[in-house]
Image (tube, rainbow over all chains, first blue to last red; front, side, top):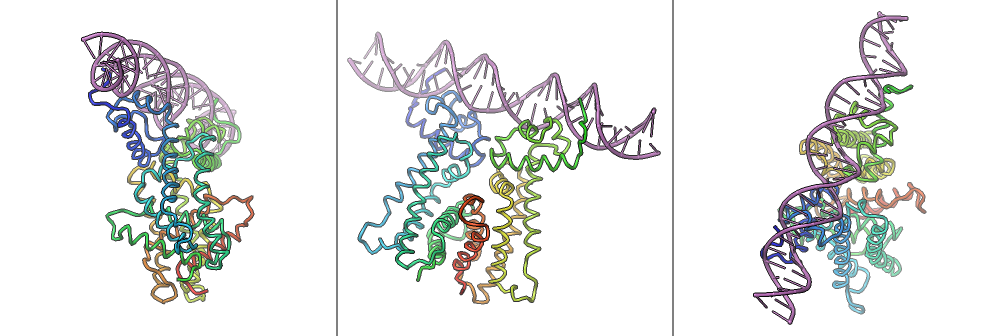
Length: 202
Length: 202
DNA sequence: GAATTAATTGAACGTTCGTTTTATTATTGC
DNA sequence: GCAATAATAAAACGAACGTTCAATTAATTC
């Protein structure tokens, strides 16, 4: 047989992306087979190659999309210049809040982007690391501004930025929606801890 | 051919463990083949099966050893009862310091234990998670004691413990020995940040 | 120094992998 | 309704995988 009733390229590609995120997050990229992925989508393995030329390019596409979404998400919520929230403390609060909510709503994509970098070729790895560094640079600038203004007490900006990123990304490792804490409570908690961590006055 | 001159079971097993840690940390467990591992050790693939019945049991053995070493390491440096350092702040300082140094000296094993849990069968996974929970329980107890004594300001002990663990384990992701900061400086930095994070007076 | 045991090799097994090729059908544009 | 094209199926490819097994040699024991 061949083309099936109701088949549509855009829908199929979206279904592949979603199924791949779920399978890679659960099994790992190397452990997921293209046949397994095709089965989850409801298609034959050969059909996947109409949308992604290789398995690695599929992974790369998922990571690119995730990192671009993350950067775009911060761009949308970043406090406007001149506003009260544009001060370092307000920007840091917005950054942490957005980061927590973004990652909690995209657990699969986050696991893929954080755990499967090893499976990328050197060139593609560099691109993803560049996007990541761009995002982390936003945090470093906030910390540096707060340090300059004397509202944060920070020994080493780069080290503190890494520590904060690790801490707030780690939420997806343990958080489960059915747990006692709501997403709001978790975000508020991480915000408080971050502010104390940088020595901001409350 | 067969047994080679100078071959020794204990030495071979140790060489397998070390090579496996390095390869799994670099390539990932699924991506590492038994032939690759054997090549690194300088042996044929079949020889590996004298020491580990399956690939998964090898991974499990590596993780068990790492978790047991971690727990034993904390047991050795834990401040003695009755000492000044036995107060929550002293215990937390010792915990963070030991955690940072232990992980920095065992980067490969840490990556394996943190990133490859997916490849364990359910039963073995439960055992490793049990050891991990036991270790994290030590931190939770320190935080709870400090909260009780009024020397820490903590909103949620369990959440804070996870945040601290993620933050201080994250050091292995970015730290490189050739960087500008020494191991001592890094440990001191993480100690300061942790104390501020829990609202301890300095 | 012969018998025993420990350590390893080399070849092979069946399976599964990512990917390619060719054929076939559904949909779209005119 | 007919040509063109988009979407998929089915089968096959060679390579690599984890693992097993019989044969062989080094070290140890008596």
